[in-house]
Amino acid sequence: MPRPPVPDLSLERELWSAGHGVVAGLDEVGRGAWAGPLTIAAVVVPAAGRVNGIRDSKQLTESRREELFDRITAWCAHVSVGHVSPLECDALGMSAAMRLAGWRALDGLGVEVDRILLDGSWDFLGDDRVVTVVRGDASCRSIAAASVVAKVTRDRIMRADAPSYPAFEFERNKGYPSPRHRLALAGYGPTAIHRRSWSYMDQLPWPHLRVAPVTTGAGAAVS
Image 1: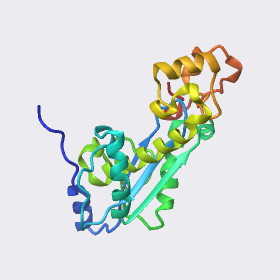
Image 2: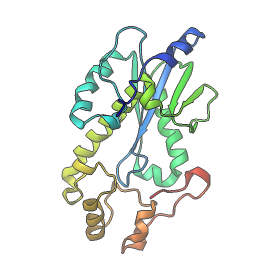
Image 3: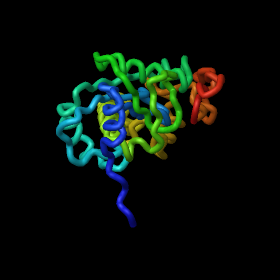
């Protein structure tokens, strides 16, 4: 079985050579979760030096991501993380929530960015500096580094919230669907950090707690 590709700086070097001195890689985590924030990290990697082992965060164990986090943030020239709360996700819908989290991350970099590398084919920022990269978290080092920063940051938030909601096991599922999460929802109902416009709420016996989803285009609530 072939090894997965190792993210490299090919795309960044191409953009640097074209005169785009500051290139930011962005990646998100939490889009499909039922609880917790939507999180997007933005990183600007330097041309010099490297951190061995950077991969798409989904290819790494939790302990390995934690090991890499400090090394990545120390290596990068600029790092920022933007969050959108569950309440904001409900009020905005996913399309606008992604845009808001992305711009919060970019604004936090504190530097003017020449090009923005986004994982996937969807330019949720709506900016002419964006370059979309399908499977970018597996091929582009800036995006892969951002994926690790975003995942570790959000996981830490969910672990910190877990003791307040012990039945939900947020320290394990991080707010994503799981059998225990479903069971706790059925028994206790949604917590203060649940997204109440998501379609999983249709299966619960508390219809008065359901928030009407945003239904326009890509902003519609998800399951």
